[in-house]
Image (cartoon, rainbow, N blue to C red; front, side, top):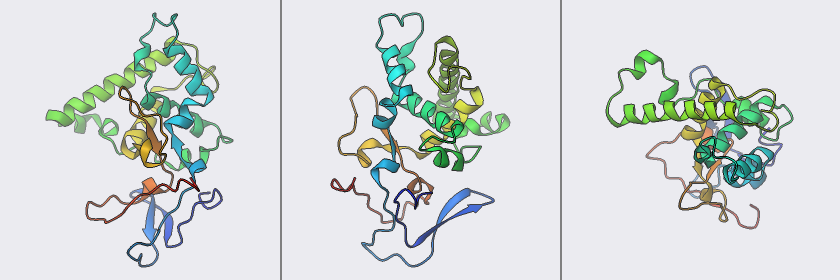
Amino acid sequence: HLQASGALFPKLEFVNTTSSGITAFATDDIDVGEICFSLPAESIITTTVVNESTIGTSMLKLKHSKQSSSVNVEMISNEFLLCLYLIAAKRNVNHRFHHYAVSLSSKPPDPTNWPPDVQKQLCGTVASAVNKALSEIKSWYELCNAIDLVTPFNTNKPTIDELFWSRGHVVSRRFPEQLSSPTSLSSSTDHSYSMLPGLDLMNHSNDANMEWDVDANDG
């Protein structure tokens, strides 16, 4: 599906492994300075794309509405909207990012999806971050059930499991939107993000000497 969308990766292959799900492997030596992966702009999920979608516009309208004082709309963040967008993509087989959403593992790698007995052993800043995340997901779930949502959530609201799934992948795979778009919606109050199908399946070695670039002409 990546190739059909215009992505180029002549020396890479994507294999569905038993231990790590779909993973990228090099099929040949990659020379210094060689472009190993090219992803067209229309194949990238960004905060701009999400906020201009039906889900994004309706939720942002609620956030800025004077009639929204009955619920805590301040939790409607770019991160939350990206999570809803990913859930919608997974549900809808005709969604432009459906193939990407269903390729993601059912259990994201972030600590909120670790077994409860393992979570109890966490301490310090990691434990604090997990507790904050669990509280955030619970608040998102309560918000979704307290307001009217647009399709596909108007009749079937996001489940707590879907929110755990989407948030887990968003926080573990997201990149700054500036990485994929020079004209992002970043602001001082809320971060903007991008998710890069295919690129986010490559290993993230601390020793890898890799550079990212945006072609302003080709997107």
